[in-house]
View 1 (cartoon, rainbow, N blue to C red):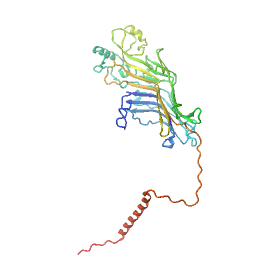
View 2 (view 1 turned 135 degrees about the vertical axis):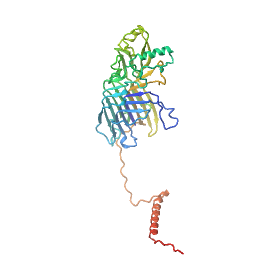
View 3 (view 1 turned 120 degrees about the horizontal axis):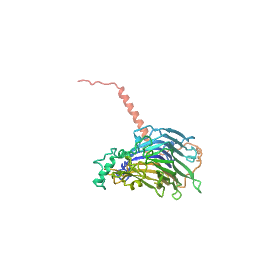
View 4 (view 1 turned 120 degrees about the vertical axis):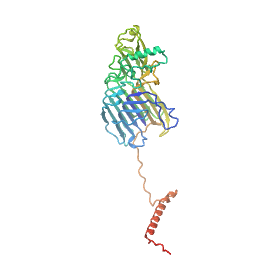
Length: 473
């Protein structure tokens, strides 16, 4: 058994806010919470299961243009490509989907998406083929979060804004500062909301692709095979706030790859993960590098406070990172008397690898191993200075390159070879002796038909006799 899944992009609103439903009493309190809304694009999954209940589901390859989940409930998405085996498929299946315009365009918008799927299973060799299941998706363009629905749209927060760590005078200064911005907090003060990828929080102008593969590989020093699941993701560059004065380039220097291999033995089964290396650049200057050693980088979002100091370059927009709206450096403006207050943070995270393993006996004795990872997480986090009631810990989250891989092999590995059939034994001379009666069920059928025949006979006799009228005295 093995499966691999890769998602090009997943947008989450209010992550870890909705309880996970369960039919087991008391399990909802123990399970981790889910997002209120999830929207995904470019999903590729490959599965192999020699113990599948349905014979044609032993190998499955799927490429889906996207999906939506509301508090964990996800309907089937139309337009998906799928291929199953057996019977074997000599050629893969491919197709393209251009997602239509929907009311969710303010959350996520994708361009033309191409997918390819290939599932194989030999009638004689079973899973011992070149590749059991292979699915890939390719997305031409992508943009997400033209607005943040979890924040208010009005710039006037009088009577609503009340930061616990600020006095009333400081609260009023923040309210006045928000009033002077072009838009509400849901557009980050007027930064978001442009047409196309311009004004989106995150966008990918270049092609990105995902691939999931399940196959058997050689075990060193053994004639048997190991189950290997591989998830790969490729993206050249990611843009934050593209087309605005605060544009940030997230350059992917090293692509992530997740490979899980199960030999059936805990000592030799492995998880290999190539963590991505990402360079974050704004205004020609590096803000930092993300890798396994430095997995997190925070980019602050601030508003200028009215202090009476004339600072050029504000242009009724907030401050993102180290730049003002006019392109001037933040440090130079602070030296000239600019006061600011950080209301939120754009948090970038990479190399989130999680592993799980277990020795199992059902449906066969062996060792199963699994791992999940994400190339890049972008979270919009509020600070303590954002004095709005009932705010969650994260306002929105966009994940690029979600990867999952699992593999489960029997002890000693998968044995490949042609099964030999035992010839039919010769028939013995003479009649076959009758079987012994071991259950009362042997008599139930004869008794049933005997009773039915007697009942019908009685009905015929009664119907044939003439009816005698009662003589009156």
